[in-house]
Image 1 (cartoon, rainbow, N blue to C red):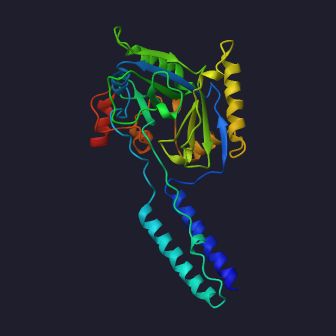
Image 2: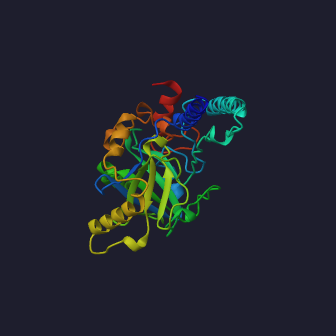
Image 3: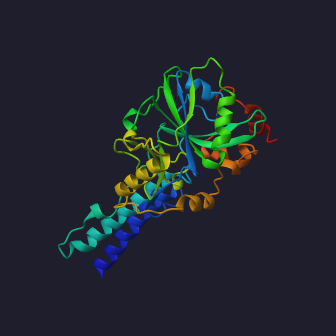
Length: 326
């Protein structure tokens, strides 16, 4: 009876710890991964000296500041303290009950630590607005030195706006052509910024069921989705060794197979998961947002809007709605 009670207590404490970790940012979905087709997600590139200054005037987020963490769903420290206290009390009770049998209590099994979630500035969410303040599309922005291929080369603050860098813009496929035209429209003739479509040599993946985006191998960059971790970990295949000059489709398929081989032992293929999670989470993207204002689509809650940065295209409507509600 005592052994059963102890086992039940340990299982309950572990479940509570897991709930404390998951509950901060919504449900942690089952393990899996998927690779987006070039039609679903495209990668646009903005690079060169002045790329940060150029994009700073076009996006709603602040590229010169550390991005904020996603909003937690409740007081994590209070829940963690409660779980710790409950686990300690259970361990003490088990030790006292087991002492008469000479077995001793094993408090090390009574609780698992709350899983830390690391967010970095390597990827951030943003919206591009037109001159009326209406959304062109949303996007995820990766910043890295020109020619970088992995996480070791990702730029961390302090941020130098004059440094020659490249932004890889992960954008929904149904809005990519519109965004590409939008970017070229506002590029000054004498600007050193170069704009291109890199969908042929960079592939986009998502991994579900983990909050750890550390330790990526060469040729990949990864980060927990900055909008909300329940959307998974976003991964880019950036290694030059998988490119194929004869056809982008062949190159993409090779990157997909390479990623599947690397992940299948831990995260099995789970195609279509992203669309389900995104819709259940109420997160709109791409053409679903076109023509709407950032605030009516909750983009500020997805860390895509800064109310403290300087001027940018479409700021007037966004600022007015924020301060006056109209």
